[in-house]
Image 1 (cartoon, rainbow, N blue to C red):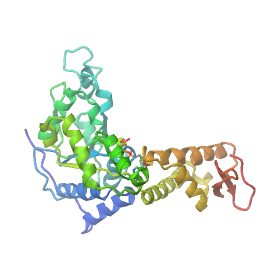
Image 2 (cartoon, rainbow, N blue to C red):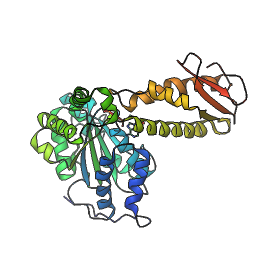
Image 3 (cartoon, helix red, strand yellow):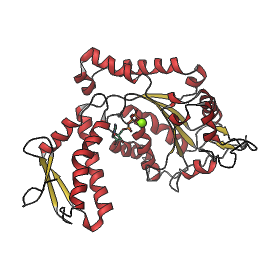
Image 4 (spheres, protein in one colour):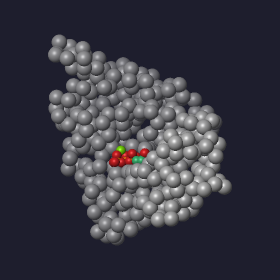
Length: 347
Ligand SMILES: Nc1ncnc2c1ncn2[C@@H]1O[C@H](COP(=O)(O)OP(=O)(O)OP(=O)(O)O)[C@@H](O)[C@H]1O
Ligand SMILES: [Mg+2]
């Protein structure tokens, strides 16, 4: 196999290492181990020293739902390429049946449906998620435990030799790729362990030992996957349940993202938001769930903030340029929105 020469990438200023890590830390909360593990692989690639004949790095991301596994890959795409969409994402849940794997690699020539079955992965799609800033492609296989075993066999070739043979006999080269695989294997046992040892409060304060969670995750993976597969993973990262401080920081990130979204979507018709401390407490209390992690917080923001705002926009009651003060209403069950110096708006 001809290997693609690995050029060194412009690293910008000296200290690109701290730049990337710091950039990721601003986007991913409370998962330091993941950041510290992933960044050196990116640097190896940027320095032109990544090994030939295999992907730049292969990571298995384990841990409870809503703790930032998928977000890590999106954040890396934002940092490297400028957009979270620069990820080739394969939802392994779509490949639970053996025959569905043809959707991934395309049907062989001569087979019924050959023309219609465009492979989900090909070299063009892989290259398309790189950018002018970086030629490193990020590939995400989500929920790998759901994949049929034939997909597992195809993956072995990708992880080991950085190649995937398509139905039409062409090959895809993954030497300029970081491969991420996420799985909830062991997540339930991790949460049960946290609850049994400390009660759910401790699941939130994150006091359980990282080592114990890692052992639970790795042993669940070893039960489900072959030793060949496990051996081809460079690093297994165990995501920790998010504590209260992490959820507060994630709330800030989400509110900043919401303000950016308002101003980019509404342009001059946009308006500002001013959350009272009580409104923040309201969102955090409603949005804290040991079971669903930050997913619950996201849902809460959607239900209590974004949906009422949409109604105010549609009814033309949120005036361009105004500042809306957001507080819990008198019943404490919803948020109320009041333009500065005016009466509350009924959402
Ligand atoms: N550690 C984190 N830092 C910042 N945001 C986070 C973090 N964890 C979760 N979020 C927020 O919650 C959302 C859901 O998280 P994410 O998709 O990463 O969960 P996941 O760990 O992949 O869960 P699942 O196992 O269900 O796929 C993200 O889009 C992000 O907005
Ligand atoms: Mg995910």
